[in-house]
Length: 287
Image 1 (tube, rainbow, N blue to C red):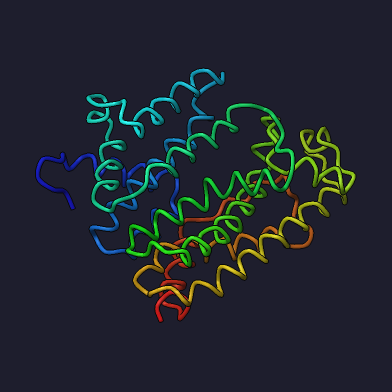
Image 2 (image 1 turned 90 degrees about the vertical axis):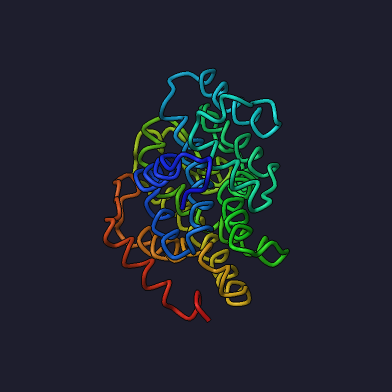
């Protein structure tokens, strides 16, 4: 998987990082050809680096500085230090080899600045914009790596990213509420008579369940649209969207009657492997 002039440990480093912090996406790369897999791992390792910043800093300023380094990298202002960063080195290689646009990568960094502060997500429109620039962008770039840069792939990526992102927002509620972070749209909570302080206090109320059920319904609509578009893509590009099979399972689990939204429910790696393996052999992803 390594090439001349590129230390093989940069590849291993990215693979280990994704395997440790984003196991579902790591598994999805196992169904891609070796060359594309390396680029996918670089893309997902970059995403891990950005997402982890909020857990690695106690104040926004150090996080802003880390984000600025990546922004400068995409602007061509970082040179020598990029070579010493294994994720940056692999990502730059993927950008070069697969002609990846840097604008969505830079926008992804910008959107994650929201994570550094305790400002509530104001509206559903704001949440969709955040997810489109993060979750959906990853699908779009992954599809480009797999050889499909088209309006159809972007349309699919947008809906798929919204479905996956909403599921993650609901699944992450226990952690976010304990940190007094609110990714659930404030406007949505208010429309169901659910107070932010009740969410931060971990109060399970019928009003909160109503808000979450509305979000799950929205996510299922996006997933349904994505699934209908997926079968129209070339089969070679479909492995980029394998994580969508996990979004479907996640939404079913999150909608289970009697589920406590503040009780973390981690998914076993074996279940993840099984779900993705089954999906990889299904007509949706192969025909």
